[in-house]
Image 1 (cartoon, one colour):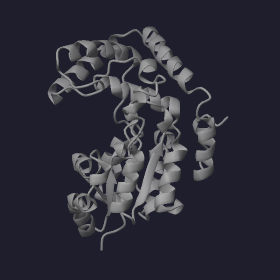
Image 2 (tube, helix red, strand yellow):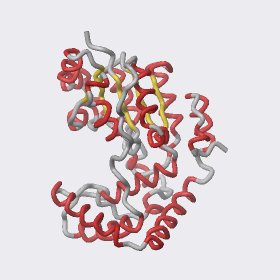
Image 3 (spheres, helix red, strand yellow):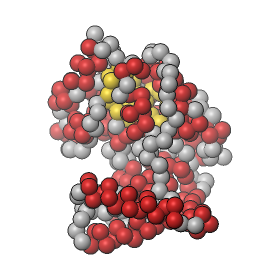
Image 4 (cartoon, one colour):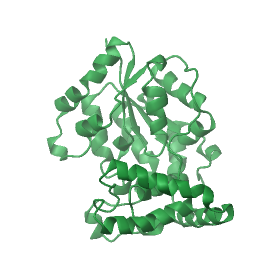
Length: 311
C-alpha cells in the first residue's frame, strides 16, 4: 500500500536542491522523489486553470508512487515553484495549491520560509544569474494599475501567512509543516529530523550540512547584470529574466564569472554587498512585521529568534 505523499511546495531559495539531493532522493531516509522536475512542471505548472486535468497529473507521477510502494517509502512531490513564481509575485500560488489538493487530497505539505531580506537578496542574485538586467530596486518597484494587468515582480508573496493559512485550510493544520530555512543553515540534522517526524519516518542519520547553490558576490552580480544587456542584444536569451538558450553557454559563462571572485579585493566586494543590502533593506523596512507575527502565531515558530522582523 502506498504511503501518504509529502508535497514539498517550496519556497524557492530555501534549500530545495539540498532537500531533493540529500534527503528526498535517498531511500535510506524513507523517501522517494521525482529526479526530474520537468515531470512536475508538466503535471502542475502553467496552463489555463480551467483546463487542468487531475487524472493526467496523477498518471504522470504514477511511476513515483509505484516505486515508493515497492520500497515502502514515502513518495515526495518536490518543486520549489509549486508555491508560486516569485518574479510573478506568486500569482499562481493559489491555483497550484488547489491542483495539488484535487490530485492528492491525502497529502502532507511542507513549506520552507526564509527571512524576507535574505530571500530577496538570494532571489535577485538568481534572477541575474538567469540573465536578468534590472537593478534590484528597479525590479521590485511600485507598479501602476495598468502595469499590474500582467504578472510581474512584487513583494506580496513574502507575506508568508497568506500561503500558510490557505494550505492549512485546504489540508488541515496538522497536515502542513512550516520550517524556517535558517534552521537548515544552523542545524541540518534537526531540520531533516523535523521533516521525518512530520511524516512518521525514523530520525535520519548522516545528514550533510547545506552547501548547495552558493550565492554570487554582489560585485560579480553587478558585472553579470551589465553583461546580460550585451547577451540579450545578441539574441542568446528570451524575455527579461529568461535563461540563455544553451545550457553549455550558461555553465561556461557562470564559471567565467565565478573565476573572477578570488581576484576581487575584499574591501571592494564588501562595499558592493553593503550597497545591495541597503537597497533591499529600504524595500522591506517595516513591511513584514505584522505578517511575521501572524506566521509565528499560526506555526508556533519563534521567528524573531531567527532574525525575522516581528515588530
